[in-house]
Length: 321
Image 1 (cartoon, one colour):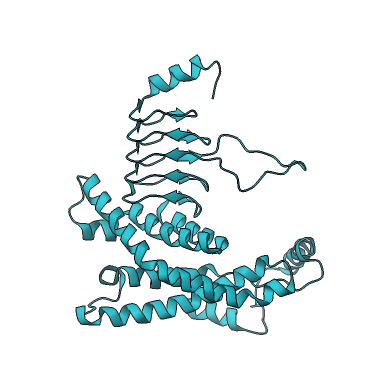
Image 2 (cartoon, one colour; image 1 turned 135 degrees about the horizontal axis):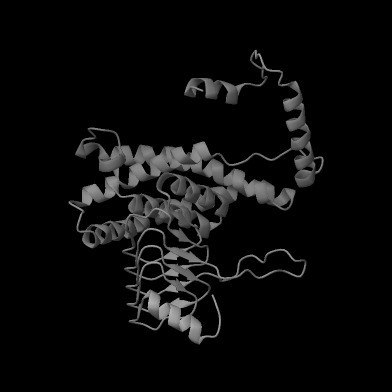
């Protein structure tokens, strides 16, 4: 469907089904019944709430990233004396749309009418604080870009790193998503993380705390869980998982939420391709985790963990992982 046609469908108050040689009536009716059942289980007899828009957030990201790096992601041929004007326009447009998306997300989780009525005020405050944080986000990203350039002998320039590296693309979006997450818009942070995941193959939960000069080399298949904490100058390669080892359950048998369950990596830790680090364990400063290793217990600072050592530690502990 063309963009024009898609907008027309989205903006129509009344919908007319196109002619079709297939008899879609039973399919449409069955889907309608399933929607109604799902709706009643979620909202009862109330009207369904508005949902945040992934498409709108893609546009917000484009504007924010263009404002952070106007020479790389702004319009072609942007003159140096026009940079501030472009950044002002890009931020104004992106932040206005972001405020609307934050409001929608807050209304979605509001517990009563009073909280829902305050959603716009809270959205304004969140976006204002987010805008004030953008210079610090840009500073952190500058450190990440330099880490990527200095950590990859194939990198020929900082411009190449900014424009081409999937790890940098993922980290740019993570730092924006994390900013929204900590300010009280976690659903928007999660949508942004999934946009980055789709774009790069790198899955970083917006709740993960990541220090400066972070570098993901190659990147495809990297997974970083919600409560992971990474120090400064950490380097990960493709296929690395920083995950949970087991999940706690509540009294009713459902999975418990919001508790520390992912690894802590100290400063200057390097984790090579395919390594899996599970549970709320600490990998000490300056340690190296070799490729394809499973690590489920604390690693002292300055250690080098290889497959043989990991296997021996597991057997000595008296069981499998």
